[in-house]
Length: 332
Image 1 (tube, rainbow, N blue to C red):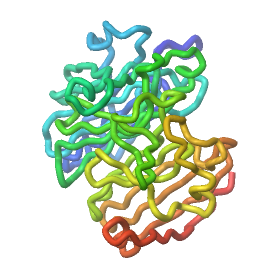
Image 2: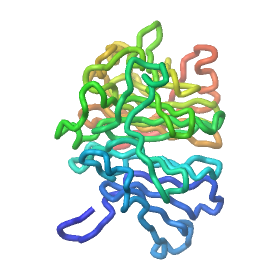
Image 3: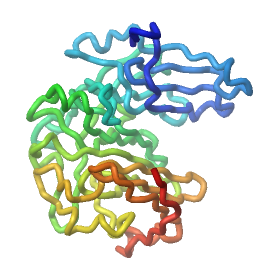
Image 4: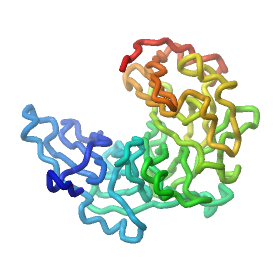
């Protein structure tokens, strides 16, 4: 990225990914807006000023075939187990004026030395959907790996502000939502998001929704419960054991994410009256406690909520509600 005032800079940091196979914590990958992917091999040093980052995507032939491609990275992850697989979702989902859109997922099988671009899904090719879907013009909000099936990874695909501004998305192809890969990111498929009772928000057999689908703004894996959790714009919070089918949490974080305020609206990108424009999720991997933070379309804070493991353990199998308790309200 070239700055008029500062010369060559990386751009702001949009994502961080520690290599889980490095027990020392020294290998850290960084995704940036406009600056691509960088790596440090000494991130755990006591002197932060001595940490050295080197670029991994400055000479990126994988994007040669993409129109107006950018190396703005929205999400970054390293596959656990020392496989060398790194996934970088291009396209910044942070709704800033410099949140440039992407062209798909950059995948490396050798720790970032070489990259390939996955621009579309394989739904139609594999007979699992009515069409293939594309990532062009969108942004990536997160990745999450299953610990039950180490090759299963889920991606949250969201809106890119710049892509929306310049109409970069390809109608009938570019599509926001939740995607899963059964082979460590080689092939990708659109997930089904359902509110139950046969009411789908969207899915591979449902056709193309108005408004380029429903943006997924966060996704995490809870290793204690063995489930994925995700936030979906204008719909609420969802769970999945396999990444393929997602169901709405029976009890949402907060009292406003009701089914009346957040109707299914099949084939439409949700209801703006539903007070979740962006949801962020985090999981304590030791206890399984889950945290959700929501803001609405007007950037009004809906609070941070916590779900504890004993409460979460009743979810899904018995159909019991998920009790959530507020831990903090973050004033602006």
